[in-house]
Length: 70
Image (tube, rainbow, N blue to C red):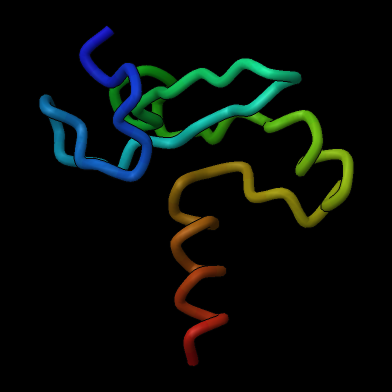
């Protein structure tokens, strides 16, 4: 509950950016470092669209974001 509604903000425990999963009209926020050992949970709509390109870890997501900015 410490990260409820805090998407994009730093985790109060470790400082990692809070991630979000959206499904239907609901969403769940989580810290990938504290709660899933660095793995990103699959957002159903985006992971179906991206298929094999869906990042599996937080590091992959950050690398892809850096690649887009370059």
